[in-house]
Every structure is written in C-alpha cells, then in structure tokens.
Image (cartoon, rainbow, N blue to C red; front, side):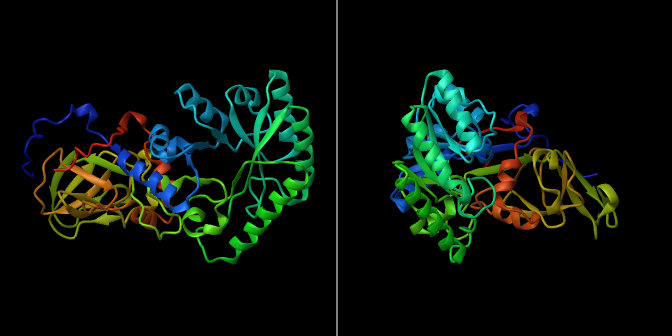
Amino acid sequence: MIAVAPPRTGMPPAEHRLAEIFVDRRAIAHNVRYFSWVTQTPVMAVVKADAFGHGDIAEIALANGATWIGVATIPEALRLREQGIAAPILSWLNPVDADWAAATAQQVDVAVTSLEQLYAIAAAAGEAGGTARVHLHLDVGMSRDGAPTEIWSALCESARALEEAGRVRVVGVMGHLSSADDPESAQNDIERLRFVNGVRAAHRRGLTPSELHLAASAGALHRPDSRFTLSRIGAGLYGIDPAGRAELTPALTLTAPVAQLRRVGGGVGVGYGHDYTTVEATTLAVLPLGYGDGLPRAAQGRAEVSIRGHRFPIVGRISMDQVVVDVGNAQLELGDVALVMGPGGRGEPTVREWAAWSGTIEHELVTRLGVRSSRVLRTSDARWAR
C-alpha cells in the first residue's frame, strides 16, 4: 500500500473536486482584438454550440471589438437576446419551419438557403407585421448549407420582390469556403470567384446588401482576398487556427484531481481488457473524468496529462468516468490537480496534441467537453496552479 498525505487545506469541498473547465476571458479578449487588427474588418464572434464549449463569452467578445454575434440556430439567438445581448445577431442553420416570427420580432438576422425558406420567412414576417432581416447564403463549394448556384438568380429575384412588398430586407450575402484550412488550395480561388459573381448577380437584381461575408477564421487569417465587409470568427476566437499556422491564444484548460493513488507491482493489468500491463512496480493515479466528460476514447494509448509539472501517460482504456495515469515513482498526494489539456504554458498537453492523439480536430474536442455541466467551472482565474 502506498502512503498518501491527506488533502491539502484550503481545497474546495469534495463535491466540487471533479473535472473542471477553466476559460481565460483574457485570451478570448486578446483573440478578438487580434482578428480585428489582422482583418481590418468588423468581426462577427461565432458563439454557436455553447461558444465551442466555452460558455457565455458573447459580452466579452463585444467588449473587445466584435460588432456582430453569430449562431447556428434561432433558439441560440433568442437565448442571447434574453441575456440582454443587443448587438446584431445572425442565425444561419434553421429548418424551413423554424420560428421565423420570433426571429423577426427580436431582430435576429437569418440566413436564407432556399426559395421555400425565403417564402416561409416572409410569411411569418407578414403575420407578425414586421420585416425580416435576411442574409442570402450562396453555396460556393461546400455542397452543404447554402443555396446552390442554379437557384441563385431566382432567389435574388424573389428576395427583391419581397423587399418591395416590405416583407424582408436583404442585409447581407454570405458564403463559406470549403478549403480555407489549406490556404494555397486553388479551390479557394474558385469559391471566391463564385461568391463575387453571386454578389454581382444580387446587385443586378436590385439588391443592395451592406454585409458581404465569406471568410471564417482560417480565411480571415490566411486569405486576405476572402475578407469583404465582415469576418466570421469562430474557432479562432478560442485560440484555434484551422490551418495550424497562427499563434493564437488558447482559452480553455481542463483539469481533474487525483482521486485515488495505489502502488502496484509489475505485471498488473489496468482497466477493461487489460490493454495495459505494468512493466515494473509503479504508482497508478485515478482521475475522475472520462468519455462521459468528452475525452475521446481514440486517444487511449497515446494521451498524457501533466501533474506537478511532469507529463505522465494515461494507461489502459479511457472509461466513461475515469482514467488511470501511470505516474511511476512520483511523490503525489490525493487532491493534486492534473492538467489534462490547456494552452501548454505549464507543460500540459494542448488541445492540438489531444486532437492528434485522437485523430480529430481541435473544434470537436472543445465542443464535446463539459457534457456534465455540474462539473464545469468557467473562470479567468488560474487558481489550480501550484
């Protein structure tokens, strides 16, 4: 049996000593200002999916230079209005039977990707006695969201007719590059030209959109020709460059306390299936988080954590609620805090490393964390550091 010291005094109550997410508001503020400086355009701070897992940061973004807020769905936009966010908000991914009337009433801009959607929006606005603010969304190459080029002319003509009837106001034209994470790809040139042609087509049909936006984070950073009147910044806001080139400031740190320590001999199997067997006598530390908290099982056998400034491997399978760390002969205490992932300034694994270990992208990792909201703490204070 390993002798362990009691938990350090001054620690929070045990029920709070679980996995915690810390979000550095200063990092988000810095990234917003950086994108404003780089792009020399207004910035739309994209806070969809709980701000990529970072929580309520819209006010921080607006206080540091963002002038727009972007979300996927109308319910996300309405929650922001309820929280007192008065800045322009754009919602761009909604079914044809979405609550267009509520969006119109709350002055939430919505993206239009089809004639059916346009007519539904106009009908709802008419019933509500208002005018819907819309952004016509052109599919420039994703074959995903956005109106296909073959209906673009009809969409613009119908939007203009509905403008004259007072049902809609075309505020913007938008698109989304498929290959901005590879800035030298010729596909970016093709898609930019499609966007420009789409804007020209809109102008020829009498539309006068004030907001033209094609660039998201990677395009805004690495393709200056994709910046028009507005830059939509999502991943970059949180310190992620999809192209992996810019040195942005990561905002998220995930921690977990050491919940158990045990000394074992060599040849001891660990976890389900005994995928890992100890080579020699060692100490195993259990951390109370797992795939139920968003850790990817695909990272097992490669992932590491940092405790007291040293890296140790996660061994065996990543379970729903816990992982086991082989800490060798390190002298640890119950309650020591493991840095699971973070900016990297304290030697901890970064989100980028975890993405590589699990064969995914940083965006997926940060948005899947914090599934158990009772375990999430959002703060700018790095009090976990020893």
